[in-house]
Length: 256
Image 1 (cartoon, rainbow, N blue to C red):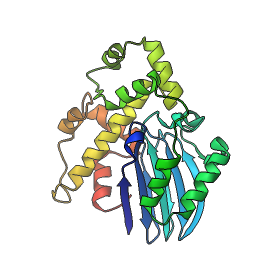
Image 2 (image 1 turned 90 degrees about the horizontal axis):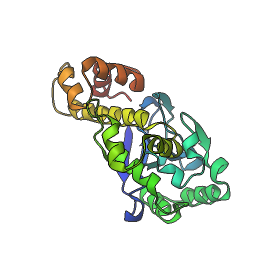
Image 3 (image 1 turned 60 degrees about the horizontal axis):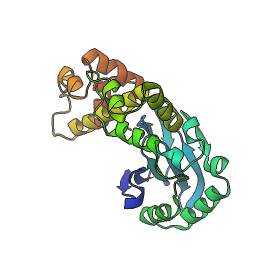
C-alpha cells in the first residue's frame, strides 16, 4: 500500500514551490516517475532512519523505480525553473540526481539534520518554510518562467505570442529559460503539456468508466493542445515510455 499527500508551502514561497509532498509504502513494488518540468529536493527514509538528501533534476524521460518495504520520501517540488533561485547549479542537473550537499554544502547538512529530527511530513514542511530563502530577489527571469508555466501553450499557438507579450526578444527569452530551467522554452512547454495530459488521464481513470473503456484519443489530443492524435501519441510515448491507452490501463490496474 502506498500513501501520498501534498502540503502547501507558506505564502512567501508559493511563487517558487509547487508543494511539499510525502510518500510512504508498506510493501515493495515498482513505480513509474514521469517528467513534470520540476526539480525536487528529496529526503529518503528506511523505516525511521533517514538515509540522505538529494536533488533530483528536471527529467526528460520516465524512470522506473523500485520501492522497498517501510520506505518513505519527503520532497520539495519546485515550480519549473525556480529551483535555481535556491540551489546553485540546479539547472545543470537535467536527468541527474546529486547529493544536495554537493550543491549547497553546510546548508544542506543543516537541512538534513532538521528534517531528520521531524516526526511528520507537516513538520518537515514547516522546516522547509523556515530554511528556504531565495539567493536573489525576484527578477525578470522568474517572471519569464512564471509566464511560461502559467500559459496554455498549445500546438496551435506558438511561443511567439507569449514571448511578444513578455517584451523580450526571442533570444533573451530563450536564454533566461535555459539559465533557470536547463532546457529551452519550447522543450519545457512540451513537458508541461504532457504533464497536463497525464493528469487528465488520471481523471479518466477515476471517472467510473468500465475497465476496458477508452476515451476518444483524437478529441483528447486536441483538448490537451496537440495538433492531432498522432502528435499526441508520439509525444506521450517520448515522455511516458508507452502509449496513452497502455498508460491508462496500467493506472486502472493500480500500477505505478
